[in-house]
Length: 162
Image 1 (tube, helix red, strand yellow):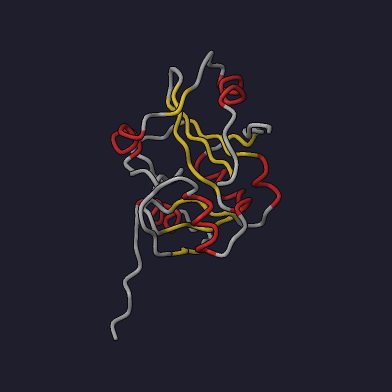
Image 2 (image 1 turned 180 degrees about the vertical axis):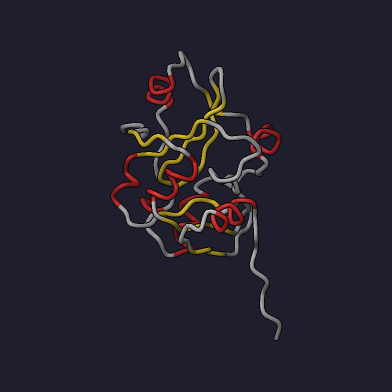
C-alpha cells in the first residue's frame, strides 16, 4: 500500500518556516454548507470552542476575523475595534481573489496580502486551537499565542451575544 501524501499549503509552509510547533489534522469532507465548521469539529474530535473559523469582512479596509465555529461574529464590535463606521462580510465570490483561499479553506495564515486580523479572546482559554490549513479537509492545530504572533492579530471580544 502506498502512503497517503500529506497536503502542504501556503499556511503549512509558513508555520513550518517560522518553526512554530503545530499539528496537521486531515479529514474527509464533502461540500461546504451550513454548519460546516461544526462538522469539522466533529470530524476532528475537537470541541467547537477550540475550532476557529476564518471570516473575511470589509469596511474601508479588509479584515480577517477568527472566532469559534459555533459562534457568530459581531460586526458592530469589529467596526468599533477597527475604527470603521460599518463592517460587512466579504461576498463568497470575492474570497479567492482577496485571500488566495476558497470558501471552507480560508486560513488566517498565508493570505495573498496581510490584512488586519482579529481573533476572539476565547482562544486564550486553550493551549491549542485549530484554524483552516488553507484547503477544505485540512486544519492546523497550534497555540493561540503562536497564531496571534504569526498573524499579528488583535485579541478581543468578537462574538455576538445571544
